[in-house]
Image (tube, rainbow, N blue to C red; front, top):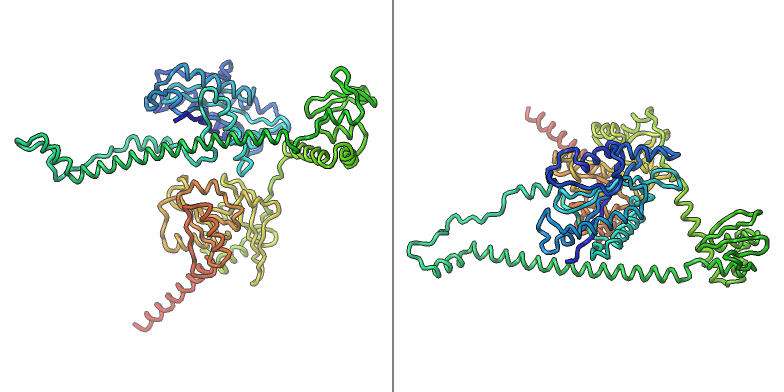
Length: 596
């Protein structure tokens, strides 16, 4: 199979993270799987032997704006290729490779880092002391336009736009290694890398052994060789192993064919994507050529400049600059050029272009202008920061009382959520359920009214990011264990109610880490993250809307399973549970009194 590119990135959000990564990469801490007899090579930053933490701090100190508390200070990039490239004759020969191939790959990777990140890539270390050569590169994500550190602007954040940027990054690296015969992996593949901990567990586990308790393996006295072989071959255990080996060989063959088909499909996708880009570059989506606009404006082309009407304009692709003493001004795009030379406003420029280039020409110019403005706004405008409602501690007893007595949530759990900052009271006596992204950054809040007996108010705090924040909490196993099960509910109160029914009341503490998440619409599902969870339970309720939503989740997440409650929703089922418990206790009390 053709060798594939490997590229992964990791966010380093604190200087402690930077220092810890530096210690690992520079081998200042013990690395069990590294060969101490082999030397690593610094490809970038070799002239600066200071700790990486100091270099990153110095780089950030040049900015006008200090990083936000949750900012990514440095991005660690891992670059490599699959073993088939480094040792084509035997990929399984761990720790061995062709030096010529390794040097070609390292040179191409280093050139790609310099071309794409320049001096923002402060260090790149080539590791040769492990099974396969790889590079650890450190990039300080400086945004020159906003004068801030911005990992999202350089590499993309969560959501579709972030995945698009990461996909483009993979495409770019694969393009740089293509001359070496290294291809990009399948776009959108859900394949994951074995974790180091899981790898060592697999290596150190006992190998499979066949147990022949009631069978004589040694030849019998005077038993002929043919009879011995026939006797062994007729054994049920022998036949079972034969079948298993045959099945394994068949599955390996099928997997190899499937991988090859996937790679062929990926090649076709890349070819079609390039074709689409070529078509777009020559289609009506491109701006009008500025030379044609300058000609229509009555300017004369003289010594590489366009002159006339007091202007001396140089055109460079989609940009222009006026060198005349009275102007000394630049811009970009057909509309800006018309406004500059004609001295008109935006609408007048559109009308002029329509007169000279027709409706299609005016549309091309307008679309290009809108794209340029959109790009400038995205790059320069600071993101609006979500603000949680102001807490009013004086109303908390009333909100706590509502959740406990009207909603049936145990008092100790209400206080636990409150102590963790996941629910509190605002100035309107609303229960504020804090919504966070999967990195636990608050990006929204769901409000539930608690005033009066018939209060039905509910809604979202202004500025809430419904696609990137959810009310969620975790139970089970160790606190820092990986989440292996997610339960989806339609509201924060339903999520809490389900958790109480499942664990607190029944005492069924989950053996695996479980997340309970409130999702009120399919559009807000974190699909990519949930696809990595082995067990997803959908508890949206029994109404038609809930059942329809559960069916849609099943289409998107085949591993999900619907859960139906016996009441109208999980909170009502919790209240019914308490009612039945009280009735049982009353009946038991009456029975005890009669027995006396």
